[in-house]
Length: 350
Image 1 (cartoon, rainbow, N blue to C red):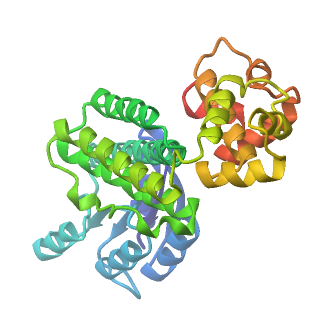
Image 2: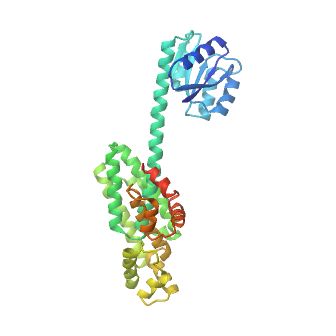
């Protein structure tokens, strides 16, 4: 139910409005009444109504000044103006302020209910758009984290696969090119933030300018892939990637065995005849993150994939990726994603 308050010094008018709202399924609930603009302003501060039905001529503060002040506080609030006078200039000004309707007293029930229906439809549309925007921003945050993780681990094929997935999701939404460009701009903005969080040494990265994003849908995905690959190449150069062949041997081993519960630092260091401390240093220089972080990233990435399949219980997923201790898996997953595995499933609609 949307919240509505009335502002009028005529009791009969307020009573009529209240009765019409109660007797009809309008989707609104009367939560407050005021007799002048000053009292109404305080009500709006306290209650944040979705709709205000107000007279145009009131004591202490006229209706237009009142509307303007509420709009400054809360752009979400909608207005229906009622007046005992057929004041064309007032009506024009009210409509410029974004008022939905200007009704004359005495209020005609059919006209009033039609106005309420108009406001209700507007609020529903706005809420739906806001919800969709909120869901996209959560998704784009996850996408950005995953893309930057693949970039930082130099996983070019994973980057291409992830971009295919992202682009297909946007195509499935059947959004217009202009909207798609705005959504990709959001993604680039989040990626820039994630890259900055990775390390302060990212100052030498290629310039990431969302204004260079092409206007045509068919070129947007390729632009994103090329951007990611350009960043990967820069990271490789900075790390002198590939000079430590023995570390790459260990990386291949980890990618095959990270789901084992007891993949230890000592075990992988032994593979290349290094001490654990020296191996740790070399590994971090080659991969940009520690051995432990690398294992964790791999496991959480796999966990996310498995959580998309409702056939698996969360404790089964924990065991499948090397976590014998389920509470430890839950804690680690939340630390990495901000959500528990169960919350993550709810977010993706499972």
